[in-house]
Image 1 (cartoon, rainbow, N blue to C red):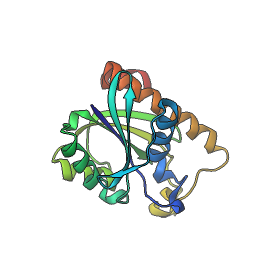
Image 2 (tube, helix red, strand yellow):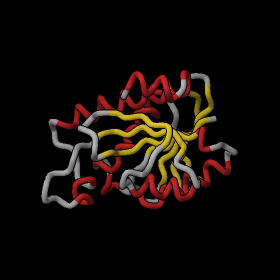
Image 3 (cartoon, rainbow, N blue to C red):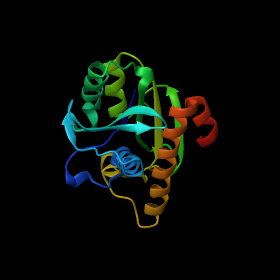
Image 4 (cartoon, rainbow, N blue to C red):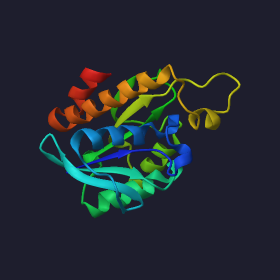
Length: 185
């Protein structure tokens, strides 16, 4: 079983923001694989389904970004999964809008949601799909930037990135993270 968690902030005010790209990818996966993500459990909205012949849990932690690890820890414990069974999808301001970067481990890189997950799991070894949301403009506060929305020019690019991230999840499940890194990085 794989746990595929998209990071974001709950409540409608954050819908469509740069910081909620992880949620957007989960919605994309949910639509494509017909998995309803509407059950509230483990401090998350979850849905159970099958991707590439593998049982999966799609999850959108509802703890707010900085406490994402609380939900992830509960999910891994409850479903008796290891950190190797976890795929986390989230925004990255160091990548151009729409670019993907897949990693099997690494630091939080300043992302507070990932920092909290690493703290809760006691390891930085878990697969992640970073979705580029672009670098913040000079003189703009980082929080204001990531809580802002994509421009009309960026919206089709980020929708395409969500499709690619969904494809990357399938490759990770079917062939492993190394293969996905070769195809999508």
